[in-house]
Image (tube, rainbow, N blue to C red; front, side):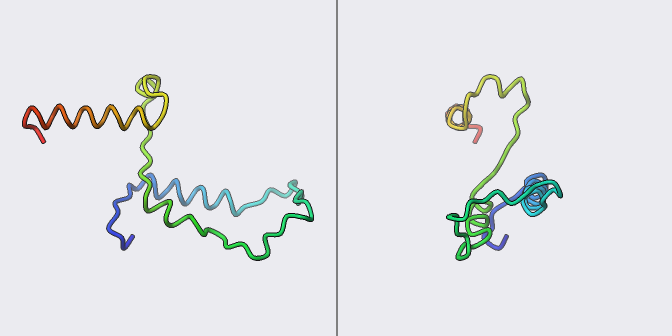
Length: 91
């Protein structure tokens, strides 16, 4: 993480788990790709690093998650909280 981005230990573990899930193939799974799908020039993980560098995944407790339908709602609430703290001289 030379970009200076902070990543929590849990998000690193999540990325490692996702990577291991993506690279393992169950024995009973057959190759069901159609012949017209050509990934011969594909680059594995092309967008993984930029996504990981710009992401900060936070898991909300279920009782909190019920009040926020999406990420935008969480971000809006956090911005309102920060503005209130700034006005009160807290931040």
